[in-house]
Length: 301
Image: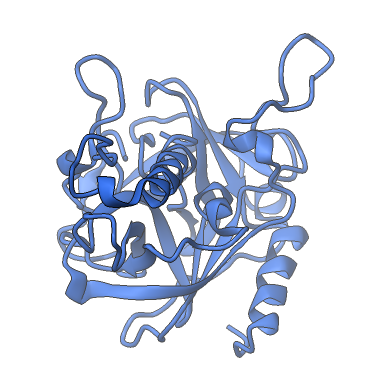
């Protein structure tokens, strides 16, 4: 990611705006990409099989900062669940809870291999984060867990789900199906393979850090992983064999029997050790999705 350079003479004409932009960009780099870590051992979706899976990008819009319009700040994966609604991870939308800065443009692309192309962009009009997601998930101190540590991200009651209301409807693509309540209690057992899709990076850099934005190839990938555990009503764990998640896969779907049952949410910093996904098959999540759609005058799915 290219952060604004404080030595850039073109930006020195407005120091206060430049500093505000730096804070916003830095915050977005933490919020969007760092909570979950692209599909490792995934395969490119050459045939555009998962056409309703896209990428949610935050880019620079028109600005007086000297930054080219369209410059990518960060991205998450997402799934179209209605012609005007995308489902993603809540930590990908929380930055907008207090308002989107005027020089920021949130967009969605459903291109399988070239989402950087502005002709594929659909503007995001409204972003919503499930109200259960606390600020401590975004890097601030969480309440103590009573054992000298902090509340882990897979704690019950932390629901990492976000919604994107698109400015215009997507035509010609069939939205993904949402599940019925209780799939993981009624229809799934440990070891069941599921399909995971995302646009993230496939590996870390040589020093083990997240790759820069300019190295992102923009490819949609998919793979399979098996259910390992259902610890509670809000989270599921996967064994990452053979496919796991990495930076940029946040918000991408987990499909089971052609239904979207989970959202890529939280993974280890090495993109290899562990993988938590937020459940979609709950009354809490499904009712909230419908409520947000109702509030925005959208017809039933």
